[in-house]
Length: 134
Image (cartoon, rainbow, N blue to C red; front, side, top):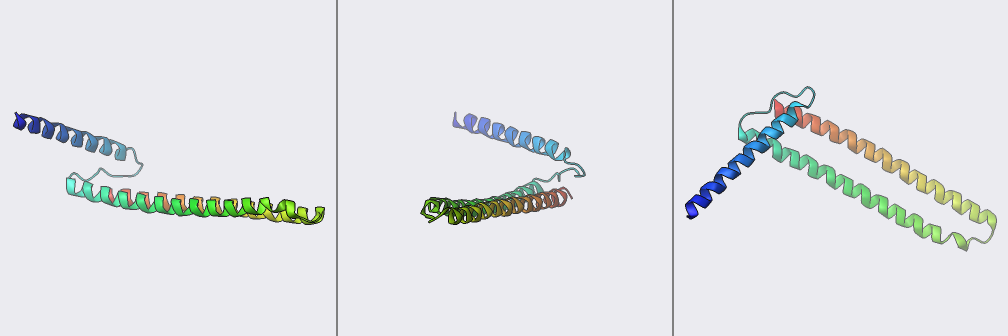
């Protein structure tokens, strides 16, 4: 009885793996300029491992970027709470302009970093696709 269960499980597992490989090959074939995926499962496994490494690295960069963004945002909020401590209107104006500039500089740096990270990701994925397909 257990032999039948394990045999059925093995067949289902093999079918699922084959279906995933076929879907993966179809997806890769839609990538412009990419050649057919390697037929050996060892190459596919290497490709998948490299893909995981690249994605993990990109997610770590994204996390670091978000942490820096939140840290700067917290500092700006703390500074905003000190705006009412201004002695006169001119000091309030100067502090408000300084806070505004810091905020927009932070946004500018964040968007530039995200743009660079996106370009690096596309370059890595393209390189991975071309090497993996070769």
